Length: 303
Image (cartoon, rainbow, N blue to C red; front, side, top):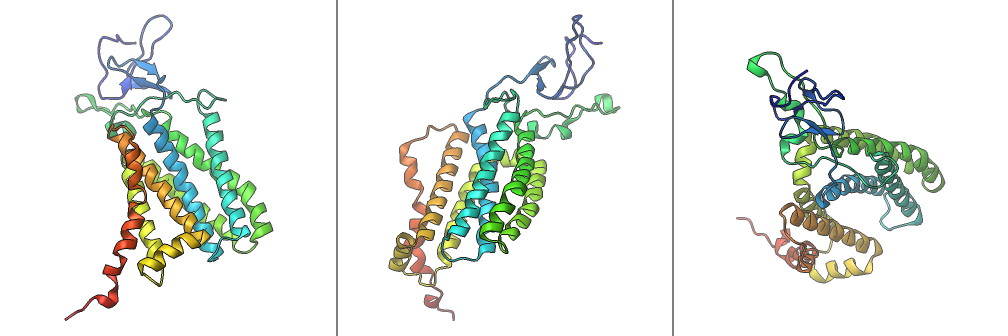
């Protein structure tokens, strides 16, 4: 047993208090606790910031968008049919259900509120890399979830997403798209482990960069959507964007993602959300439509 006046080595090692008033030796704090400036393990009683909720929402949206993308790819339909809508709706129910159950299973259990330890810096996500070796001797293992519960919540969500998909999607696919529908399930069984691996390795990097990732992906996917149009004239691009239901849905989806990224970036930078920022949402689509004629390969002359 040790005196709390002697601070533990490293950034994340702490001591637990015993009922008799003594303190334990330095070690990793229990789950749901984090060491403070005095190396005492204190309970994570903070509330997630708005940016934390945006991060969790991004992880859920990423899985949902991948579901919808895979469904569109395997369905191979140029228009939105009731069969495709049924699979899209099934994916939405799976993701929403997994999100709600994850919130219910996170402490305090049975509540949509979350108690957490706020992420203060990038190293909080990688405590494994910061185990101290006092006097270059034996390594003191203090690996813990310093950003409780943001790290483990995502893994719980992925696991529940797979379970709900295997319970719901086969029934929907069998009724509406017996042949192509099963391939969307196979695709998800591949990308969920990939997402879990990316989160395990780069969770902290994603936490601080997801606003930029959202903006870049929304711009690139918006450009790819318009680039597949055979007629690249301004009139044709505008008419196809407002006359076809599928194009309208795709463009609105891009705008929502872009608005999400703008909101997250403003929150990360500590800026207040101004309504004028919404003017940036349709900018990528308008920019492509107005400048597409200048990039026509037929107008490029090579010597």
